[in-house]
Image (cartoon, rainbow, N blue to C red; front, side):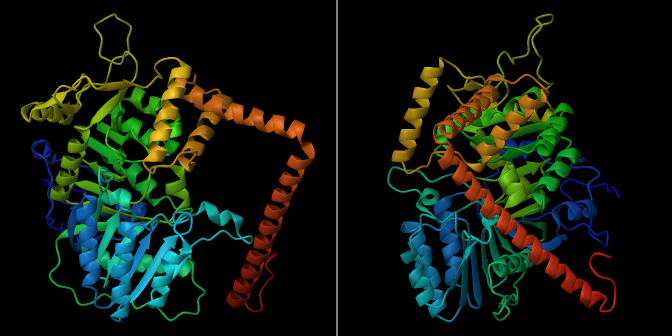
Length: 575
């Protein structure tokens, strides 16, 4: 059912009554440029509640009050204040909980509440906290805090390492919840000469907080023995709520809820779709959805970090850009220390804030949690934040991508949308420069554009990468191949083998790296065939035994379920 809406009106619920568009926020950072864009009358035209519910896997949750969070130190203060005021229970779930100044401060707050009689549960990811020493968790347990590690490595389940709990969720008394990208560590708080990482989250008061409580309960049960008493997670009596409709998007292995939601939003967007993501390796489905939106005149922009915390392969991580750039999607790299936010905003009415990165590992394999919001004031805040980040970014462009004169033979850029022209006009009025593609940048940097193709000789680029990697290691960053780079390498290899298109320089670099690794492995196999062969045999034998045991266990479970449904019926083979 398609629904006509006035400006900022969300799709109707089951009773056909549109919820008011009103959000609560003490940190309204909506810029004048975002206000100028406004909310088009045909924003996301044709999108209704039924489609959103099917894509997100969540019913529409009305009567919420939201607050946008984008500054690490102030965000942590808000979290700690809520924890200190807890009366019934605290559910604390995070991918990373470090043994540093910030981590110890949260530990002290949670331990104090546990000693005061509040039920406190902490769920952390084993891989995310691999560097956190065991002694860090001892004070929790001594104070009565229940602590569980998500998916520890196990000989019985080697595949479990591929499924991580990447959520960042805090729920207090079932009435207040915090969702976003903030992990618990000094990187997000800054200190000394180091500025904090840029991240985004949202504070929720209302029914969506109670739904987040249930989401935590399901993840907690994944790591339990099944003998514990039911969690005390009933929300305390609420105070006055807000008016904002929310969809709580629970990412689970094998589910593609965020992917489906973004593809749906991209298909319905009429004017603009702006995305911020730290590890952007979009699956083909999402890349094509964004590309098609751009080809049809939607102002699609993607903001990623220039200084990623995987710097050694930074130049290799652009191989997915060319397809998007050729379709008219605009890509920007933020020049600060690290931008870790995972957000999207469409047509000035729909927003998403959460923990999901736009890559296959996060969208298909991890436990994630995101919040979809239909609210024009909240969307304006997120658009203002996006424009502010663009002022500290440079745009990635294809060589000779500037619109040429007639007959020059160069590729023309898609015509600028009305929204893009509005951003340009307002940026100039605010004293910001606008580069040749229309991106708002500080005055004096209006020509800040970086070509996609590698510049300079290979030896010079390698030397620059090594310098960057060394600087990151000194600053406490990490280097090496992450899941995103592995996915991108496999994509480049698949494209080359299929022969679908000619590879660009960045794809050729990825393919060359993969080829070198294969040749090195072949050389080691030739020199040490017995050692390599035994290693492969042990690995395959282990995986075979585990897979066979899992198949046998599932067979027993299926037969047990069949006997319950039909005690005197056919056997499993007959069924």
